[in-house]
Length: 397
Ligand code: TGC
Ligand code: FAD
Image (tube, rainbow, N blue to C red; front, top):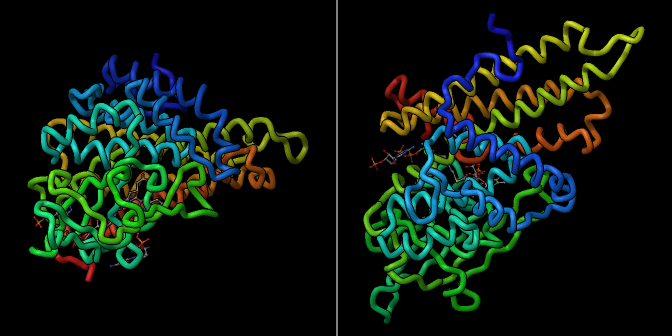
């Protein structure tokens, strides 16, 4: 007779291929053996070791859905299992990987010229070239269409643009070798994507100061991108993609990765809270796990892990069949981030005062989850995307 497995209540594993299971297990092993032992110190020190990307590259975890260029060419579900494994350790590590894979390698693969792909993708797949994605600006976050960063034709050099403007809250920017910068062409007012190579920028035209003293995502490095008449050759512009469709197409993949990744974070909180509840005794030697209010917290979290995982797998399958819509991705990004943040905060209560010690991990996870709910479209923005799709009326402006 089938038995209930609290770690996979609705048996999502039965929906995975053997390859996907093997990829997920490889990622889990690396994350638990190599990443987890470093995360506490990295978080305390607000330090991100760029070697992590090389390690992930060696395992084929970067740009994993891309075919060729040294990438693994796996399914979207397999890539989701990778983000889930990484996010089980820390959302900041998943962020560094998502930006590299979905937000930089993704658009180069989707929109780049053959030359751009050859130049960047093999090195990025190995984690030897690090990428960043600059969309958000100090005055335009949820509304990137109003961006002020501009690309003007160079007054004397044919085929060169001068980029000016600033981007903020940019994952990996202080350590990036190549930065995808979205800017409006002065000639047309249309948004275009540029590959800004740090090594090619004259002094003073590109600065990427780190944003320090963050209250979440401290194991990831975040910064600004400040461009002051930074010359970028036309060969470094994505040739055809124009308008918000460019950055948003990359965001569809990254948001899918977050939705799947959230399940790793929530599974980790659930497993830790369960173990703690079984070990900690209060009132006549009873474990906390005996109390109904505690059991309800665990039951609700396990339910949302099961539902959220099934939804992510379904959207991943549709994505590979070319049948996923942006609204489906908004739905799972919003729901999985919101439910994971809610449950992490609730499960944290089971640890009582000990939750305040970082050795118990859950406090770090809760702080990270504020960020995952905020970036790549804050949850209320995804509500409005869904509201627009349901009613036909947009409520942004
Ligand atoms: P709207 O009129 O809705 O759309 C403008 C054009 O874009 C197209 N489009 C999409 N295309 C593909 N995929 C999507 N998801 C798309 N969403 C929109 C749309 O079809 C249209 O094309 P066209 O040809 O008709 O021009 O534009 P709007 O200005 O009204 O947008 C509103 C809104 C709220 C949907 C949008 O601005 C939004 O999503 N805001 C949230 C901003 C955001 O997500 N920023 C993310 C920054 S990157 C980041 O956070 C990385 S963190 C990484 C990490 O560390 O893990
Ligand atoms: P705002 O747009 O000012 O929004 C503030 C609040 O108002 C939100 O709750 C929002 O939902 C709400 N709001 C806004 N407009 C409306 C409306 N019309 N109706 C109802 N509510 C509304 N960006 C990048 O480009 N690249 C990166 O790599 C990147 N990494 C990040 C890493 C970290 C650690 C963080 C914190 C952010 C990162 N971001 C990145 C930026 C992130 O995408 C933005 O913070 C996010 O899009 C929200 O923009 P904002 O912070 O300007 O908030």
